[in-house]
Length: 51
Image (cartoon, rainbow, N blue to C red):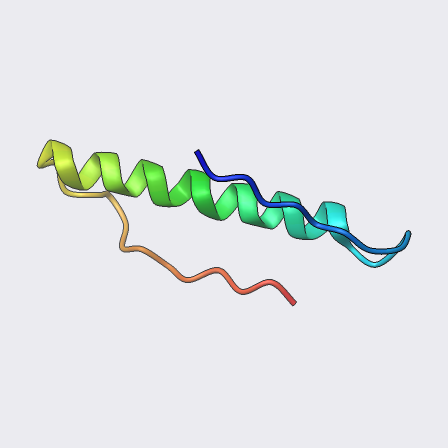
């Protein structure tokens, strides 16, 4: 298990960064499971950039 703590004053984007990190980790795990199962993914992996 990995624990990441985001700190900072109010209004600096801690919640947004935490949500983006959770989404990235969730997608990485889903892709990993698909690759291990031997099934080809329906779409190619796309890098998501957060601005």
